Length: 333
Ligand code: PEP
Ligand code: MN
Image (cartoon, rainbow, N blue to C red):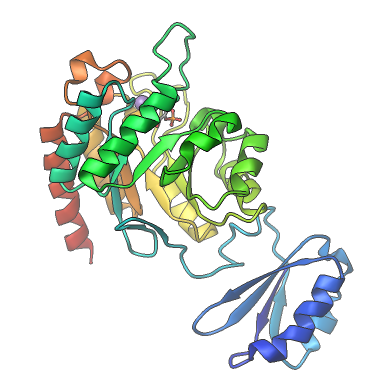
């Protein structure tokens, strides 16, 4: 349920109402916009008399929110959320290009890729240290050592870093990581989401392989309901009957999520397509669709990559793509 307060209502005037609602065991989420203040009520609102509430002097209107996601809901928070890390901003008209290898493989590799993507204009460096692999015999990532190398690349380039967490036991290692990624396979690892909700780190939450957009938003809600509102949503393709591409990129997700939620939405065309030649056109399409950022895999030697070489761009291909994305965004203004 939301209560929209009349224009000009002061915090002092709203205070007794908020106290009364909290007294009914409701969580009151206050969203102060330029025009109006919205009180988002979370909990058992069945006992709230909507007519009584709307008859109050300071209340403009009252609406029941039918969607099960509340804090992620745009009705609760009409302005776009903007996530800020280092010099990068994502959301609310700010766009971030995230680039880097699927996995950190060595110091030489990550420094070389980081330096190249920085020179090409990337805003954030990605790189997997803990890798969720289908086969237990495949390269599992450099783990703690991988994070150490990413931090070194951050020091060298000044780029903020994003890397995936698979198990909450590793959280300590992420202390200096700028954005923690929850991968597609963990989108519904609710214990992990709740623990990350107790941190203040921005969380990059990827859509599960076979999950609906509502399920993605409910997973964001798991993080937000614990207090962490810094969530970035990521469309990375879903599993369909199509086999030519690794997954099927659902670009309508960008518009749907922007409609339903105030959270920033980025697109990962690398995991969505699985093929390097499809990455630039889908990155451009995602930009045109209004994504708040793009995340692409870049490797200094894709043929020798320990993971996802087939979908990795070379630094030169990335530089070309980033320049095109920049031009497209200029044309979109
Ligand atoms: C990744 O970004 O490294 C990754 C494993 O992606 P996803 O979780 O989308 O498969
Ligand atoms: Mn990958």
